[in-house]
Length: 125
Image (cartoon, rainbow, N blue to C red):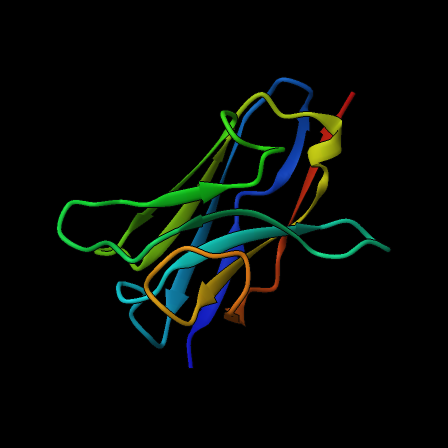
């Protein structure tokens, strides 16, 4: 079973940037699609971004419309890690952000089987 640990959250002003990291142990991530989700207290968890397992040189990503053009998901299989670069942050991006491993190679918004504990992102107005 894989353990996922997020880091990099914090408090930032509107328009600022943060880079979230997700470190994995116990299993290689290279054969799994990975995703980032977020959740506001009292609301359902929301899909943010996903990245496919890299095959050859193709890196397939998928984003929620609310973050497209502002957030970038990436991965480093050598470090067994996934990242979420968040730019032009808005107060509505405030949430706990979770890293997750998907059962399969391709991107998707469901089918995630392993989850981290989350990291808080707060964007002040």
